[in-house]
Amino acid sequence: MKAVILAGGMGTRMGPDTTDRPKPLLEIGGHPILWHILKIYEAHGITDFVICAGHAGHHLIEHFARHRHDPWCVQVADTGERTATGGRLRRIRHLLGDEAFCMTYGDGVANVNISELLAFHRGHGRLVTLTAVHPRLPFGLVTFPDGGSPVIGFDEKPEMAGMWVNSGFFVIEPRALDAITSDDESWEREPLTRLADRGEVAGFRHTGFWQCMDAPGDRRQLDHLWHAGQAPWKVW
Image 1 (cartoon, rainbow, N blue to C red):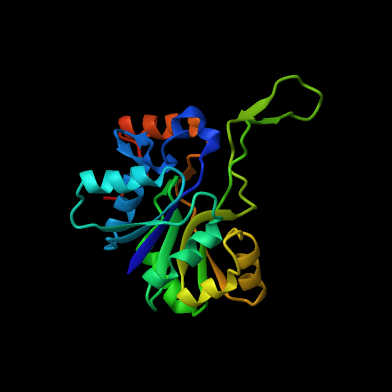
Image 2: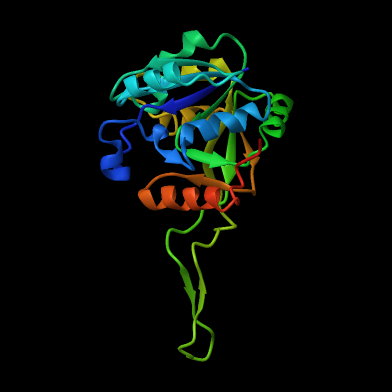
């Protein structure tokens, strides 16, 4: 089985660190976050990867030319500087064959049980499985007790237990890519909506750890967890 990693975005919210290099090569604990993601898949027996490159993609090619990671087989595909996520998948379809493949983004880590995710996908027979997680509020939640007291309760970045969001860990049948009609379509918008409207998307609920590296603060937090020996995504 192959795993596809979307690694072509501009990463503008990370500031100057991504001006001339891809965000997936920014390091957590001395290794690119992309290395951590591939290690998660390797822990479940998946070692055949297609990396969809775009912005500063030559750095990805050079990285894997310099660093051999047995037993990984890594193919870096140039999918265009400005191509949307759906367009990137559309451009590498010829590399995928006829079997289901895993897909995720090159800036998020989790302790998703990939083996259970695959078993779930094979059991329901739909074209796409999306791993859903509880989101966290970006700000601390303040609660006021009854009676007008000024004493408050505080919960830093609480989980929104009643809601689920897309974590970015997918299993996809190649036929699902027929829903992508152009390079300008984001996978998460029109194509996934079309498939969901046809009843072809199933949700795998993950209640464990998940963190996307959207901003420098996220990177610092992940780096802290790694150096403290408290990285939940380290499943290898």
